[in-house]
Amino acid sequence: MSARAVPVQLARIPNALTLGRLVLVPIFAVVLAAADGGHSWTAGTLFLIAGITDQVDGFLARRWHVESRFGAIADPLADRLMIDAAIVILTVDRRLPWAALAIVALRDVVLALGGRYLAAREVVIEVHVVGKAATWILYLAVGCAMVTGHSTEWPVDLFWAGLCLALLAGAVYVVEARKALTR
Image 1 (cartoon, rainbow, N blue to C red):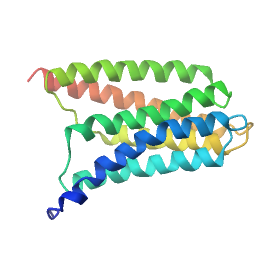
Image 2 (image 1 turned 45 degrees about the vertical axis):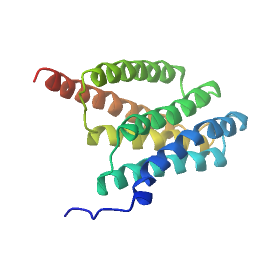
Image 3 (image 1 turned 30 degrees about the horizontal axis):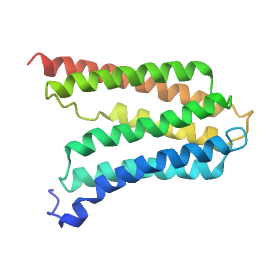
């Protein structure tokens, strides 16, 4: 069933949510960095809001058929900036292991360079369910690491699971990109 056309003002909501998430990143980072040892319900709440708006903006853009080039670039950027800010701060506060920082940095470099390469060739790779699941698991793990006690281990285990899923999603995207480039 196709969605009805929406008024221009409503069609702007997905990109407005993405912009809001981009604005939220530095606010979140300051709140988390100022928190006692990376433990903050306020930062956790801001992180939750970012995670929810990530899902809502994508759902609305697809539902209303108002996907945009801006959204295709800014939405994943906002996700990576929010998750990366949290991971850096939580790593410094020893809530996540140092190895997590190196792996996430490597993943982001590959995504940034690969994205530029594909964009220059006008190749668009659709979001895969594995990538979405990885993002949600990472959001959940990192958010839980912010609001649980220092000795709580399961958020770190969940983080590793999400990161493994993100790496799997990366492999799926590489395969899809290769197919698109050889057509």
